[in-house]
Amino acid sequence: MRMAVVGMIAGMALGFAGYFGGFGAFLLVAALGAVGFVVGRLLEGDLELGDFFRPRDERRR
Image 1: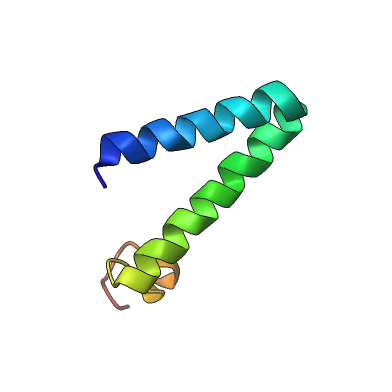
Image 2 (image 1 turned 45 degrees about the vertical axis):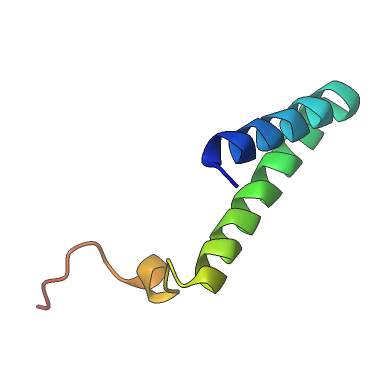
């Protein structure tokens, strides 16, 4: 699926959540979408769990 279609579906989901549930539902859907995105990238192998816990500066002191 193209990224434009995925973005459109995510935007529509956020729009529906904001319209029917208010700002709190909008934030909840956005946060859960971000979590789902990260989990999906982890399962596909594009990200590693160590990427989140490793310091940006790779130099060891």
